Length: 293
Picture 1 (spheres, helix red, strand yellow):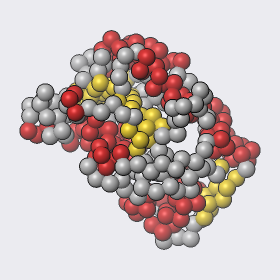
Picture 2 (cartoon, helix red, strand yellow):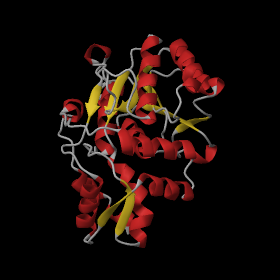
Picture 3 (cartoon, one colour):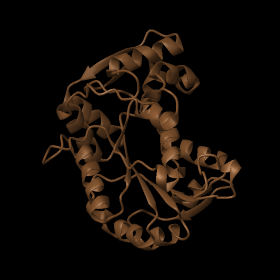
């Protein structure tokens, strides 16, 4: 097979379907695939979400017809499952099995492979999706990502209103720059079959950070004296519901903050796939400081 890691040296141009293409990570992946010369197709829920110059299919991952149309002549799929229940994924799995593309699934570093049940609903659905893909014989490439740095964008409104960010306290995590995850994902989406490692690849940043640590890094980047205020679960729940977040998501986030154990894992898997060390959250904060003003 031609060397797909250097598309400019070969006429081979894989066709890749990106789900979650309008999100923080998906946008980075689409940009990189286009830069590599891949043919990119996005599955979007509304035509208004379609990116100029990028082929799009309008539909939902739960709609078999839309998935079938999106998979026509596709070589690989970057899959993000956005729901807190894996049951609606069965039609998707059927369509993937029929089309038989390479599947790269974005999962979670919090999965405990030795546990009968996972620590919270968010991790459980990732474990369930991994099992469904494997049981269908798809042999997915699994990227288990730690907390994405881009999740900090959820604090924009609070930081525009003042110097305190409040929310539920969570265990420290090895926060990973979504640009690093995108580089890793593109590597495996474009890799020749004989160089493919199915993982799971555990993608982390270089250090464990608490919410307070992240706020401190943002403060340094913004040259502001910022602080994090931990909220009791009940108060955090009521505030998230008042902000309009769906109740099932709020309950899952609260469960994750209460029960998810701290991960002590910092890996070099980003470097193995992307060819360079993972970036720090401090660097991410500097690069994105303008978004918080």
